[in-house]
Length: 231
View (cartoon, rainbow, N blue to C red):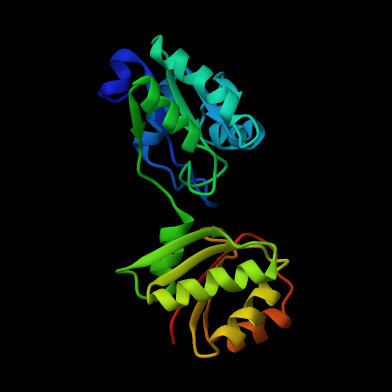
C-alpha cells in the first residue's frame, strides 16, 4: 500500500471502480486493493470479476450494500480502528454517489477512524463533459423518481436553476421522461449518455423532441444519464 495515513494505523479507503471499461482504474486504486486486509463490496460477485481481471485473488471479501450498511458499517470501522486496512468498492464508480458509502464515511468520522477517498471514475462527470452542455455549474439529482409527477418537479427545478441538471434514468422510462421534458421546455438542450465507457457508448444531443424520436425507433438497454439545460 502507498505511504499514507491508513498504512500505519488501519483505516477505511473508498476506492472508485470502472463504470464500464475494466481498464479504467488507477494504479493507486489497484495498489490499495492488493494490500488491503479486507475488501468490502456492494456485490461480492460483481466485484470478484473486477478483482480477478486485475489479478487480485485470495482476498477476504465482505458484503456492504444499502440493506445492511447501517448495521455493517460500524463493525467494519471498529475493525479498522483495531488496525485493519479495509477498502470499500461499490458496483461501479465513486462509492456514495447513488451507491452505498455515506454511512460508512459517517461511522469513520464519528469513531475518529482514518478515512481516505481515492479519485476515480464517475458517470456524472464523464457524461457532463461529453454532453457539451455548460459544465461551470451543475446539479446532480441522482435517480429520477418512478413517479411521473416527481420526475416533472425534479426536471423543472433543474431547468429553472440555470445550471446543467444531471440525473440517472432507466431505459424503461426514458420515453416517458423525454415526453415530460418536451412538455416542460421544448427548447431545452438535452443529452442522453448511454453505456458510458463501454463498447456501445452513445451520446444523443438535441431538443427533447429530437432525442425522443430516436428512442422511439430504437430498442435500447443499459444505464443512462440524462442531462438538461435551459434552451
